[in-house]
Length: 249
Ligand SMILES: [Zn+2]
Image (tube, rainbow, N blue to C red; front, side, top):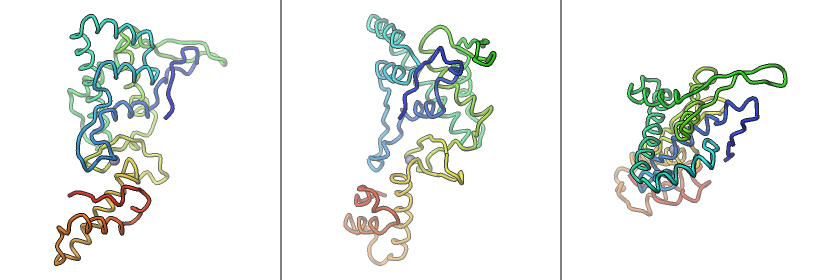
């Protein structure tokens, strides 16, 4: 995965974060680690302010010095750290709701929209900057580095809605995954975050359901060996090592 850095001297730097960066942020609350999808638990990749700041630095949406300042501040005053982390999580959850609403073609929760809008308005300044062939428009976020980082992470969604292909925004069809991704497929009909995991699971589940319907007399609760056999004969499952793992439900 590429890491975007702040490039303040680049005339095109208004777009520090790609839409993929926005989705990566949303996906840091991983409903399921898809490799452990059968175990069923949510994983928060930003469980602490420290982890969130490290992620922001890695993604280039906050300067190392800015993150350091927060670290020092929250060491002195831990309650401030908890507040900041809650703010980051709230914007992430709101972005998730807004992205979901786009993908599901429905109206978003107004409170989530408010939260995202507040994040976007974090002291954004539009200005003209010189370009090699004239003048171009830039915007910068000033003030609180965390506000700034959240605004930068929300920005690509606005750009996608105004000049991109928001209809290509997808949520993985696996209800226990719901990974956010951008459908770059030629047909624009990609349904799963990853064919090797969620896609194959869906196929294997369909195959199992069919097999069960067909072999109703042969005890559907055959246990692991029976399930593994069914999974092995499902289309494409031999491509992954997981295919031999018995699937639950
Ligand atoms: Zn998935």
